[in-house]
Length: 262
Ligand SMILES: N[C@H](CCC[C@H](N)C(=O)O)C(=O)O
Image (cartoon, rainbow, N blue to C red; front, side, top):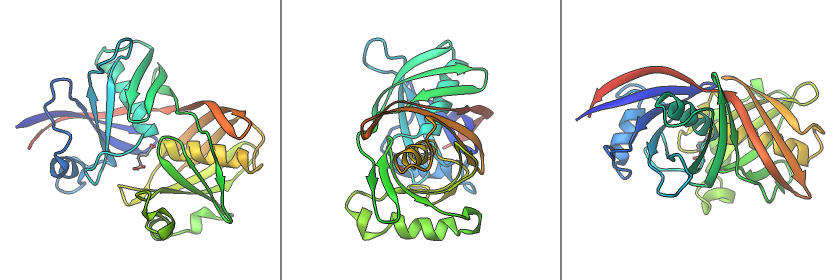
């Protein structure tokens, strides 16, 4: 079969994007999706995203996300921003949308390359001895550290991701963050399902911003996150211990279009 695809990236988190409204790719074809994401034997990406028809009124499309291990996973924030840019490119939406994903409905707006994505609400931030855990659509373990450039993210991230603490829950993503100036945080992320450091993680930087506010490291409600792949902004409204009206904003770009035999 000849498969048409588009390659998108959002601050260096990169995705194979497929218009699957005709159901050309089956969701349980793990080997095919893993191969398409393979950087040597396939196109190469951190994940693959299917755009499908939503079967509910006033919802423009459905997002189905797979990590590069080929398995469907939880919400992808950067992927959510990229699928909005893709839907705009396909002419499915104009400059705002409501779409559905594994964690529910998402509003989003697009202006040029800049996409703002409303994230799911966060009911609870769990403060541990030396870390913070929360779920922003995907599970995130957040560690604040004074020199994240010195860390071996793949090694230190994998140790936490595969630890007993997270085994039953199917693992977690791991973020290492270094406070910079006021309301600015550096972030490096180990991603579950990629099993390596990615250049940025949308649900990850969202988790870091909320964790920093919850632990008093920042007082602003709009935070700039500096990732190896670029800058992202997270804004939110604290409500008691919960967080609402959470928005993730940053660039989402089409890199190339392609055809692949598979
Ligand atoms: N690897 C994550 C999903 C993708 C998250 C990341 N790419 C993002 O931008 O949020 C997980 O399996 O929990």
